[in-house]
Amino acid sequence: MQQLLNRTKGDRIIWGVVIVLSLISLMVVYSSTGSLAYRLNKGHTEIYLIKQLGTLMAGIFIVYLAHKVNYTIYSRIAVLLFAISIPLLLYTLCFGTTLNEGSRWIKLPLVNLTFQTSDLAKLGLFMFLARQLSTIQNDLDNLKRVSLQIFLPVIVICGLIAMANLSTALMIALSCGVLFFIGRVRMYHLMILAISGLLMFGILFAVSKMTGYGRAATWEERIKNFTSKNKEDVPFQVTQAKIAIAQGGLFGKGVGNSTQRNFLPHPYSDMIFPVIIEEYGLIIGGVGMIFLYLLFLWRSIIIFRRCPFAFGAFLAVGLSFTLVFQAFLNMGVGVNLLPVTGLTMPLVSMGGSSIWFTCLAIGIILSVSRFVEEAEGDKVIQEVITESQNENE
Image 1 (tube, rainbow, N blue to C red):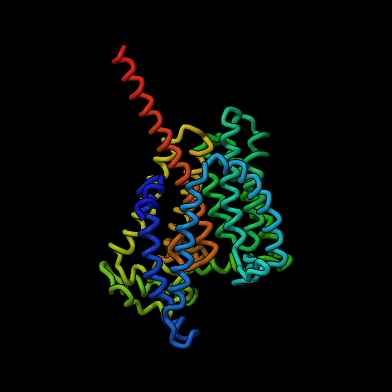
Image 2 (tube, one colour):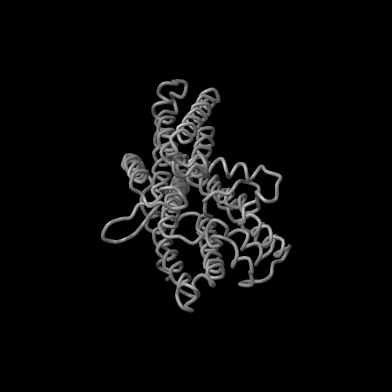
């Protein structure tokens, strides 16, 4: 064990956040799936706990493997992942498994494993954008080059995802906007990208309404329910989430004592945050979760500022921001600050491939952190040697 710890590098606080979130995930998933497991598995309430434990253990192993790889290698992998993402998203739209009226999943042959292609596309896109931004830092005034090399990939990926999963597409688009702003893309160019995105969404919505293909009706209904003052229009899951939060109060009902988990749809994924508040309270559960994700983002920003090379810096801040942004969107839906979406809480909600892609992203961030630590260590050693030589002279 000590040898493993010695070989584990990267930001220790990020490692700590990953472990704490994993432990929270185990406790909350076990609590929120107890009734479901009892009904479906004839009294075996631990079945989902065991699955989640195995998924998280595999995920942490993925973090370890990914952080051992030199982050510069991901620059070459980024092109391949981005190229694979486009046909996979097209395949998902045409032949994917339908879930909640949207084709979001594909099933791998032989292994019988399903995964959400938007997770792969999101990871590939941010790796690709980090690479592209680092190569055009000295040519950001060239609108043609900026549009083709960093704007077009975002429009293509978000457009393909939006047809089946608008909330994920919007999250990716906004995260890319933040990355571009940090990457010193001109504000005028960002406005062009925003207008292009709005036009694309308008076209998708119009085509969906006219043809009946797509999810325009679902988007319209969710916005209507969110903005309506009529209590009858409030979705059932929103009402149950409010009850859970009210019952939790400041200090919660205690671990495993949630009652609304039996009424909330998907209390182990989309609506896991109200269950956390009900059991742990607003202070420990609500504020505590916010603190953990902000701590993760803060440490990633430190890596961004310390990394001497543009690709590693953009890679760390881009991947970390999209994970934290997704977590806050999930929390916003849970407390009814945002319309209902299908976004899960990274590393906490029950899942399989989604957790593994999240862990891969965290491992890449830690790979950049490991490089920064080693580079700074070599610099300190070189300074000590230089000072020693000067003293001897």
